[in-house]
Image: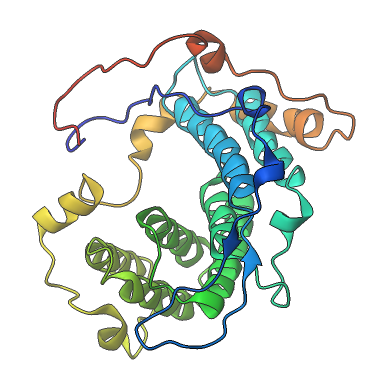
Length: 306
């Protein structure tokens, strides 16, 4: 999708009504640590809860899909009501998680795919208030630290690699002293370095995030060469291959044009009505979803797709 403008994806994701037939009683497969050659240790075997996790992950990705459509202007301008209704869907998704997927303390040692679920939630549930973005970023860093302590960062997915630098970007840009910006840079770069053997795109992402830290006036860690590999050696083609554009950040100028000019005036009243109302009804079906219901996927362009 290189060089293309921001677009609204048109694919269908499993929703609550279409997932009622899933039999969670059969979700009894086991999980254990990966073994390497010569590893003869007795490792614990645990119930994976893989189907349950995948079910809630699909519901989360449906909300993320709605976010993309909202920011792309599909269905009209992004009003305060539309933005906060979407944000409330994130909060309701988190509230609806079963206890086994909510438990993240060290003693319970949550499985890696459950940690991935929370990393995706805190890395994606962004909104238009900086304080909320910062709060989610801090939550995401804590989950990432927990995940690394339990399982290392060797098997990070590309999605989480992008989440890491977006979370780090928020913290060094808006709150560089709480936590320390230098520590955030060190953590993010070392996570990407550990994952880079599996996904070479981590190298260009490291370089881009280093540039962000310098741009924000954050002091780089003293061991930056040790934790960041070949910084400075990545050119334009490497970055395009990783991000399909010359930056990992989204083209905000293409999103803000779809935001209603009255958002600021309506924000406070809509916040009280939609987010803080304890008797709030379930959020309505978004306009874009009503328009797409029953519609087959269509391909609008083949230009540079893939």
